[in-house]
Length: 246
Image 1 (tube, rainbow, N blue to C red):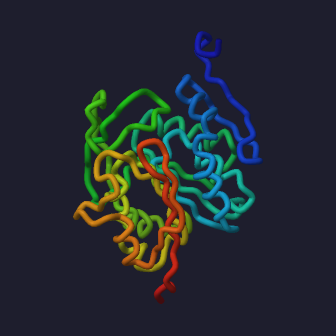
Image 2: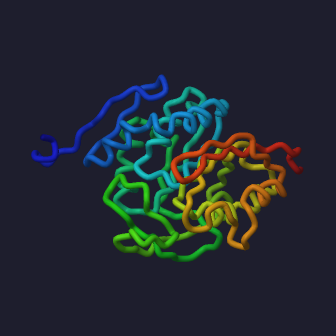
Image 3: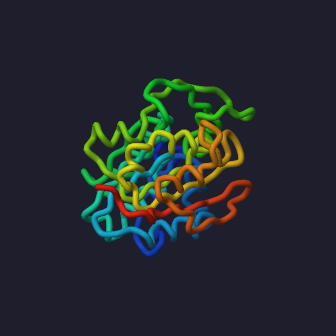
C-alpha cells in the first residue's frame, strides 16, 4: 500500500536486543531486514567484540543493515561508524537509514569503493536497490556496470584522520583487493578485529598477487580465530595477535 501511494515505509524492529529503524522502499529491502537471522552468528560475533569508543568501518554497507545494528550498540555511543557503499541507489538508502536512527555525526556514509589503488573502476551491478550482489568483480549475471571512485583504505584514513578498530568487509569477491589497500593500517596494528565474508567468485580467498588472504594477514600479525560456512562462501574473523609497533 505504501508503494501504491508513492510512500516509503518506516520499519521499526528490535535486532540483537536494540531498537532499529529502516526506511523500506522495496521488497528486497524488507527481505534483507527480515532475513538478518541468516547472518546471526556473524553479526553476533561482531557485536561481541565491540569495545567502548570503537571506530567501525562497514565496507560494502549496502543499505546499512550492519551499520545500523552496530551503531545501536551502547559501545558505539562514544564511537564512530564509517559506511562505504559505491552503488548510488543503495548509498541513498544507506544515508536515509543512518539518519532515521538519529546517529548524527557518529555515522558517515561514503560513496566510494575501497580497493588497492586510487582511481576509477567498473562496478558490476546486479539487481535493484537493496541488492547486495554488486561487485568490482565481473559477473555473468550482472545487468550492467557503472563507473565508481576507488580509494585504498589506508589513503582514506590518512585523509580523514580516522583509525578503524573494527572492520567488516563484504564486497562480493573483491575481498583481497580491499585488503591490499590496507597495508599502512595493518603495519600499525589497525584494525584490532577484522571480519570478512569470502565469496566464491572473483579472487575467492586470494590477494591480487595470488597469495591466500589468511597468509597475507598472518604476515602482519593477524590470526584467523573463527570461520563459518555461509552458502557457497565463508565468514571469517581475524584478530590482531602480534604486539602493535610503535
